[in-house]
Image 1 (cartoon, rainbow, N blue to C red):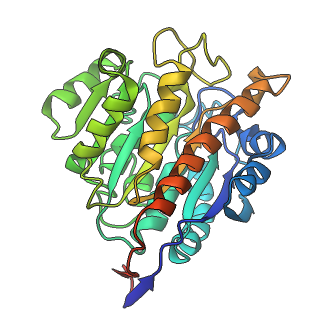
Image 2 (spheres, one colour; image 1 turned 60 degrees about the vertical axis):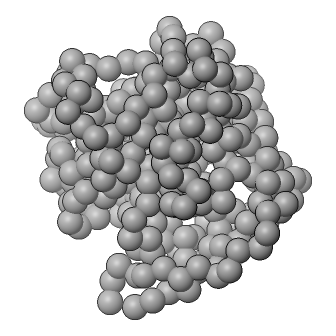
Image 3 (cartoon, rainbow, N blue to C red; image 1 turned 45 degrees about the vertical axis):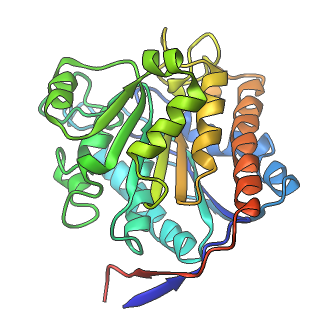
Length: 323
């Protein structure tokens, strides 16, 4: 069944994914509410977007889950994905840019699955200092947050690998990790063998964030191929932004992340993005939430400006993945 999707450059749909079930600590389930309270919807409207607020999924909470030490809290994670998926599908069908406010990293599977309903092929930009390429066989923690990208590629827990249906959800050659800084030994072995490209934080800093982002858009073939962004806020250096689930030394400066995201957001072929790992429990005065709202709104404002200046595109026909 062919579905005609008319992309709407001045429209954005927001979905909350309040989850810490896949995370390394509690708190990130509060992130969607904190970002809303910091004014993200009002700010996006103020720069010219029509915002559709699709509400929040049910909260899914962190737990140690000692009964399943190699893949903790899978039932809660899958329940979130089942709730998120139809909201994402509806948003993509409407032609809006889709923004998922999370949460932990597992939510990206629901966003990508929603996109696959209408887009047979698209690329993935993994904007994260961690590779997240562990599996239940290699994990040092059992936390799904460290396994999400491997699950997208079709490696790991069957409940996640087959959530879309026939894996992979996105192919390895169609993925770029941007901002890589922390890699486990098993992940390093994976990186040696994979056709996926990756860009280290130190190389971004050496080249300059804007130029590195432009080059990465080339790796993604973003001039001719749709793509989705997963932005993990712990890619930001701890000294610039400590309110994440897994902060640490190194990483990119806040200014580097801002410059990079702004370049990525300008692309007409960006379908959607999710943001993850902000932890309001580590941000008692809410200043971190306001800083993240500034980050997102500045990048999306630049997108609206760039797309408004571009020639109007013809309506796009995409093929549905179900009969």
